[in-house]
Image (cartoon, rainbow, N blue to C red; front, side):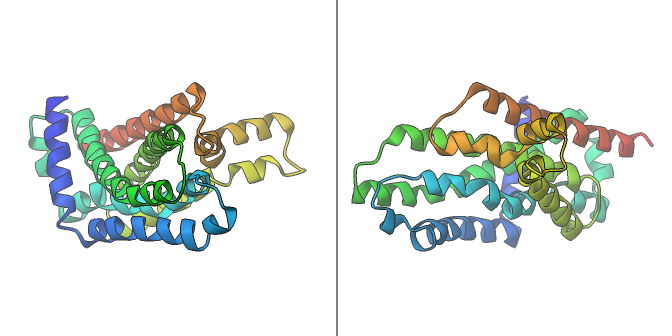
Length: 240
């Protein structure tokens, strides 16, 4: 675990050499403020609540998460440095976990910069901080799953733009599964499965301030699965 943290620190520091990281850190707070206060009708609602803010997090992560992960492996493959990376005394699992934790750290920083929203709401009225804390923890869990998806697709190509597109499309599909589940032509048993796999529906309870154990386990399982597939992709390149 300590060696994975070394990789994570290296990735986090290297991320700030990329304009994409600075762009995400600037856009996430700005977009959330515009969506919540301007377009979300917060002032018209007349209630000190961040429910609408958290409800927008799944769709916000569709472009953001792949932007944070598109360079993780694609850039290594493009520049040929993955061969040097494989010579380090690190297991594949430590490389995968380290790069993932670096991206998760960057996402945590971006979410930290959005704290201006709840502080503003709290200044305007009595805000219940319990659901807000739960919402941020849920956002990190959802973000971890989205980053794992993005990291997997970054390991599938050497082009960062392709990695971003693949990750964004995959996350968009994960947020539209509930729509497909309600289709009249969808068998009931398959619709139930798709509904449970939808990232947005899983997050709906968290947006209301209810952090259910099955939702937490779902995001942890999705994170584990995509990181495991990421590792298998790297092993296939390491030992062709």
